[in-house]
Image (cartoon, rainbow, N blue to C red):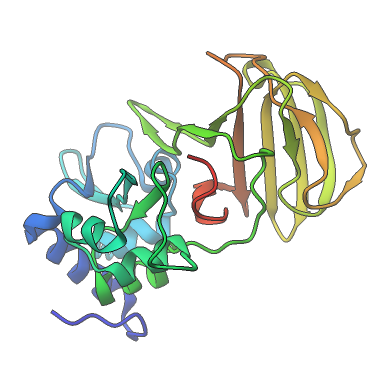
Length: 273
């Protein structure tokens, strides 16, 4: 099946893509399915799985989004895999092992040099290769758009990814680093919060305009004030272990137009390990 990202019928294209993935042995386990329970609606499911109502409608070919039924199985996402590069691996061997194309991995990770991957580097493996991956990126918004700077000086180590956690959504990306490591503003903006915030601990919130917000939680110290204008890369706080936290790390959230999104979609690839 040949799929093209510029189809005039994106809903049909995505449904065909999902069916292709469901039937493909190489994509086993990559399609996320939710069985509708009493009280579920598309708005609640979109919040739970970090997507949008529009995506859910398109993925499932729904004609009336208000009439989902208990027991109905809905596709709620096409889940990429995170691969940690091992010594001796190349981009070709990684692509072959996961049944995708090297081009698809290059697209998802913005790799400047396909011949140079490092042991310990984290790569996002897309849910399908070639043109299928291009269709998913274009129509479901899973493609990486590097808009923000990495928020921890020196990189740190990704300790927990964005996504569902049992019956809740983990709304951010956790980046482990020693206490006191500088936390950096991911983009220019204005500080709208800089104080204690319950389970977030010491929290900084920056409004970047155009509906884009970033949150920086569990800090040990804050170096900015509400109303202050900050520049991308500016030292705004220090990594800590405040609030509900199991060790020193930055919990980093990105919100666009009132909805949280996976920070890895808008952060540089291959920085945190």
